[in-house]
Length: 213
Image (cartoon, rainbow, N blue to C red; front, side, top):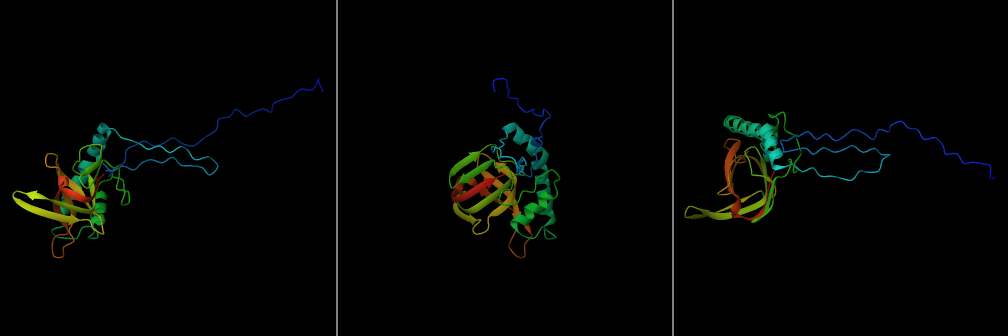
């Protein structure tokens, strides 16, 4: 036995393919700012799941995405607003109008609602939960059961939107000093043009949620 010797089996040295790398190219609608589809690395059933990672974009990257997608989405929404004076845009719903605008922008991702893209702003009642960049024309805004109350000049106003069905629109303008967004959205009032322009003052949000992507 002392003369016997253990021999390790030879191990193949050929390389093992663990799958392709992650595609980190930007694709947005995503966000109105920018709406962005997050890349996901495919998993094999024979491999253990990889540790999940969330992609974060810098302010400069978000501006670059907006320049490629947000500007064009705002232009598309403006054109559809003009077109709506004579014909129906989309299917007449909030989501339908936004999807019709996204169809006009080849670079925009078609993320299904409610996740329209890369979230850049979130507010619950008067509390801002997230702000990664300024709200920009072409961003997609969603209001969930939002109630606003404040003053316009000397008069008091109240506004309630997004109850039951969330209100979804495309930002046409944002005034940071007044925290005011102007939005193109489907007009669900019979007898009017099918897309309308509305405005919301975020500092007057008393309850509900606002998200911008």
